[in-house]
Length: 259
Length: 368
Image 1: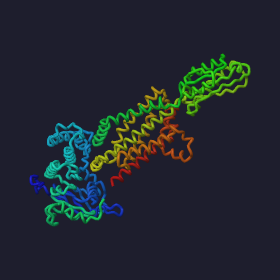
Image 2: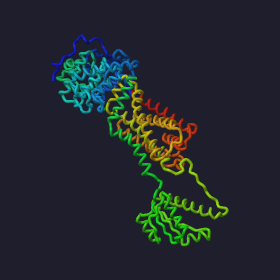
Image 3: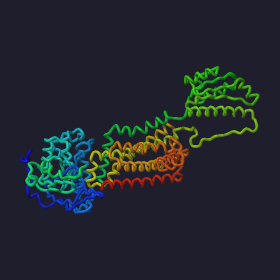
Image 4: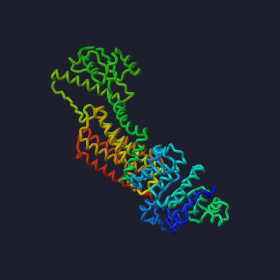
């Protein structure tokens, strides 16, 4: 599957870094989960964050989301410091995990209203935006249906829409396409491109290497360190590999730890 | 505030949509009160008895009549031999046999003394001893009456008064116990389960990434269960007063306030459990084993704490239900005011502060 027919965000949207990490580390006792990682993510960029299980991806994301304090190093998310301003960071980001994080016993509308409510959006604005969102997702008829009655692919699209409903500057997607069929995954990536085109920075982890190809730039973590960071094309050339799968295997083979 | 309200509203949706759980939560106290009130009672009513009366005089007839007239005994059969008594016991037709000697009335009249033999089926020792003491009481009543008529000098009469619960109703004992159990179940177990459920769903993660403060999440989760508990307290009290005829002698506002205090302890415990448990089953198991068993064993509601060995008595002090149970009994049955239960109240209040700060601290550690 190629991405030729998916339009990438235009260059002028990219203006300055929204995430910067400088020698960011996290140690638990004697174990260094994240070891001096440094990178920058541009506005509107789709940044792939890859790594085998136990490589330290989750710990790194938790630090960037303001859930966990780094042991050392510097990091800014949306211009805010991860040590002191994590409340401000929380207001500027959206988050979606592979569990989709919707309440099955609430209706589609109630889920949207609840998540928008905890970000302090006004009722009027929520109502307007909900209508246009449901129209866009072609889910007007399901507005009052319980989420548990929806097919998996719909839930996933809804979860992503909910994660960016409050118009965050950055959205963190932690393995967002786990257990979804290829067609739905493709549709999902169209939504991601749309969000990026609207200036939302997308920080995504995935296990699917074909998805890594869709990212503007990809970083690959091995044993807590970033071993490679470049566009998928450059990485393939540098590692003399046919696919991102090969790149990943070449790097991941060096890993000493696993979970 | 708006954040908070949308959160509380969501919690109510969860509870109201889960009809089965809601039915259990609201129906359980009613069922428990009814079971404890009517089925699991250690009072004995209408026990069937046999009478062996070879004397058949005015005295025996009137004494037998009194036994039969009391609500505790029904004379099932009049037998003529010990063999018949034994076969009645073996067939389970009777629980007690009353045996008069020959010339019972005459002996009483002329010798100033006679005897009655009570034979009980002690395969159930509690029932047997209860029946024997009921029957003895009726017989000694009768004896007093006869003696009074004769005006004999120097008789010592014992007069008993059962304070606060003159009819010795079991309900006086278990209504406070059921209240403690129900509040603990609803608050501790349900709070723990509902928080752990969000962990399982992955929604807790999303919540923690959002700007809402963790303390608000926790309070919003607790509010619906606090309200449910108030409904449960009301239904238990209404049932006790109108169905089981247990009076509320003390102040109702004080009783409700103390119940809310105990509810807060239970909520804090639920919160504490939720921060340790990773699955709903674990949360349920810890709540049942860690909370229910101690409540049943150490609150004094099933087994008297006074009779326990010292180490167990010391342990019983850390069980919140023990203090709540004692407060409810004092306020509801004895009718005392805050002045008499301030110590217990203070202990419960201390537990609220202790458990909540511990739970919030653990909650924060988890965020690290």
